Amino acid sequence: MIKEWISADRSPTPTRTGAGGATLLRRVATVAAAAIASTLLAASAEAASWIRVTSEPQPHNTSEVGLERTADGVLHVLWSRDSGASEQVMHSAISASGKTVSGPQQVATTPNFVNSSVDLVAGPGGGLRAFFAGVFPSVSNNAIRTATAGSTGTVWSASATASALSGSTNASAGAGIGAVDDGGTPWSAWGDSSPSGGGLHVGVNPAGADLAFSPSCCERDPNLAVDASTGLVAVGWNRLNQGANALQVLVPFVSPVENAPNSGAVWLQQRIGLTGRIGAGGIYAAYGSGSNQFNARPALWRIGSSGANVVKTRRDAEHTTLAPAPGGRLWVAWEGKDRGNRIFATRTNPAATRFGAIVATKPPPGTDAIHRLNVEGSRGPLDVVALADRGGGDIAHWTARLRPGLTLAAKPKKVAAGKKVTFTVSDAGMPVQGAKVELSLGGKQPAKQTNAKGKAKIKVPGSTKPGRYEAIAGKGGYESAQLKIRVK
Image 1 (cartoon, helix red, strand yellow):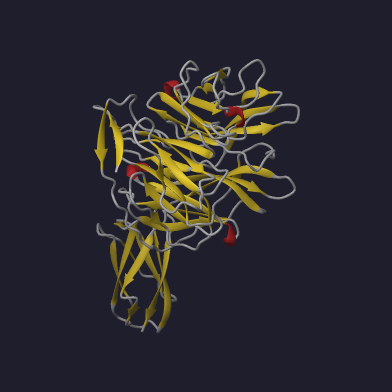
Image 2 (spheres, one colour; image 1 turned 135 degrees about the horizontal axis):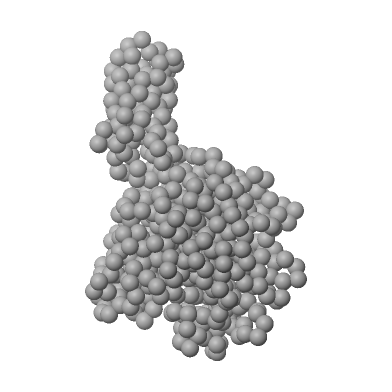
């Protein structure tokens, strides 16, 4: 069980990853968390085209970007840069098609240093708001800083202090920075630089107090999310030094800290995957399930639930993260280091209780390692931003787009020549209408479209020779699915 804040007129229309609707919440209620069923589904793959986002090699393999999509479909990227004599916070933009990158524009600069983790949320009037920290001349180095821009991100305001000016927290040296916009009220969080060094701030008024996670150590890689139905805001982090690592989530002022189930394999030094849903309730976390981060499986957990939904894949999931998709769906993504640093992803059904087909892509050409993985899926497909190390000091952020996968089943899978096969095409267990199913039978390729139940019947010609043949299902907006059948 988890206590949630309830607003009398909450509008379930979030506009960004982890974003929700209204402002303050007025009463407390208790809701039961739903159990999630685990399902093993077929996999498909896509050879995605990668585009370089950052304009020059990154100074560190710890660089963490912020992502925010504006109403025109453009995906904005906030990132840090070390140009030698100074360090900057920069902005670039990925086109709505995902095929081009524009920029960069400078958001802020300092002759000293910028925290390698930055974040980006919705800003005033449909624009952008950046959160970052560092050592800036003539200002407090302990505080989070913020700057705003219009929807294009080309011109930014002067940066300003956005958290308390005093206290034990130190955002400039914080172990990660995360942020969310709750219907016009921004929240920011930063990880420990020392015991009690992490903190949370509501709004951007430095006169307000910072909230500490705990008096002990160590909370790292924080993130925030909003429940679109209730307005509940949650903050999560990776917790070290309590006997075993764990992903923890807190509902400020309302409920005690919760540990994500079997989260000892969380990937450190990456902002945790935490989000609400688009047009639906609940806050979810994605992480590596197991006891070793190099031997983990991707897990999806709804806060308050007693168990997590684990993707049935090989135990080599690293950098597991997530993003909301339209209609209540969620994307879960991870890297498979043991499989050539390939990027994998799966999209759930609208109830977020079942996974769809796994789609995959190779990393950017020449990649030796992936150090960070951030994703955004609010328009349906998944835009991936990966920090790829290509050797020789070439560490940069790259982007690629993945489409959801179809699952194809056949009954029977062994069919006599002259008989019919019923094919079923689904997306995370839901029937897909209008998909084209084609059966390759040597020189013949009979095809049919699926009906409202996702089914298509294809007759195998009586002259077909015995053997194994391939069926392919495809539809616009999806990665195709393949299946072998045997003709007797």
